Image 1 (cartoon, rainbow, N blue to C red):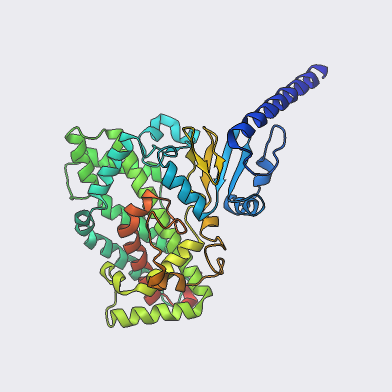
Image 2: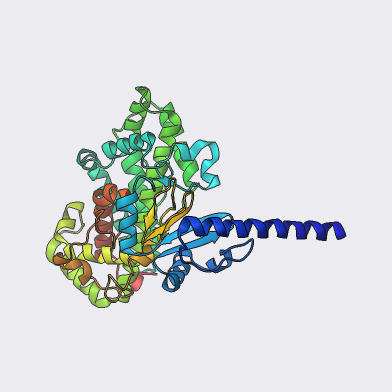
Length: 419
């Protein structure tokens, strides 16, 4: 018993000494960055109970838009304002190009092949992004699978029409529809029954798709075929193909489905907005039964609805953390310590009362007024629901699919059916 107590006291003493020394080092490096006072050993971990973006926003109100947190042995800097985000990205893009990679993503070298975790300055990241930009998001590639996307959208509408007068779990139905839309456009197969559950995990699903297509001689002219051709030509390794499939499929399916569900939830809470959006649909589409992607350009109010929902409910409220890999990063007059984790709380940025009037209210006029000029652009740091480079790639594919799905659901799904 005495030995155990002695070991406990020794551990506490060592931890306290480390804590005090780290405070001295941190004070010098960060120029007294504001933040909550850390406790010995556990630092600020007790301050983070609850949803992370909400907790960070509350702490920001007390300590400012550039804030220091100590999370055990990790130093984190939280950025929660448009001006601070602009300064960080515009002046220090190269120094903040790296990601903080969780241990789970390092397994089997996954993070070394993934666009999600590779730094944007890495040649491998640029090569992978080039493949995706050429074979998924280019105008030619988008046009090539337009018919497939429309077919999967009609499948979702048929599912909703068949259940007219019944209670519908819209979130589950949309998620299944989006999964099939993505899988059919990329791999020429369906992965679920609309409204049903996936039979296997996403990682296993992508690996199974890759395994079947490496063993099959059939071609469909889809994204998977393009990747297999790159592999045959020696321009891409097999492991890279699986990782690309996982990155694109995971990023596209979740973001679209979650945003559509949030939009529909906001429309339920705002009947006048719903009525105006439906009136725009009826006026623009007239007797057409199905909303097509090309119709999105004639639905500016519905696009404003989508953007306002994304402002209030970003898919990733706190973006994947960055890493200050070099010295010289200064934001808001404070030096960001080298090696620290940098967290951008986009939920707080897009609800900043200094930028947005009535920031917690659902007001489509913020985006329906063309004079506002807020778009998916790198210079509009008050509206960054995807982060930075993701918004550029997703602007055409993501917004076309999302707007079309929402318009279609509104036309065929009565309010009383939504759950």
